[in-house]
Length: 173
Image (cartoon, rainbow, N blue to C red):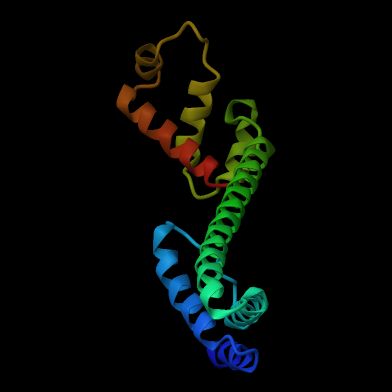
């Protein structure tokens, strides 16, 4: 890839300017926290050759071209950062949207019947699911302590089972 770029630069008598551009490109990259990178080596090479050959086409006489090389290289690294930032933000919002879709796909645990919960969570004991189901569908005026006393279990065990069932159910998403 580098050989192709330098060959074109030599052929257009812009070898010094292009060499400076390549060196500056790697130095300017350190100014930004991220840069665009292609998904494969082939695509990266292709993009690099096209970009640098385009820059070689913009370079003029040596004295003025050094200024243009410095400027174009800085603009190139800025564009690379902007592109990468745009892609990252777009992927973030796509991921956020998909997570929201998935969360809406499953109904609330409280809206499911006992048999449905048992079918969805076959790895959990029936007694655990039954206790959580009864707790979720208890009279809302009844406290957790009263419910625990009525079922001869501790309040901590109810919360432990509740967390276990909710974690398993959320894992379905």
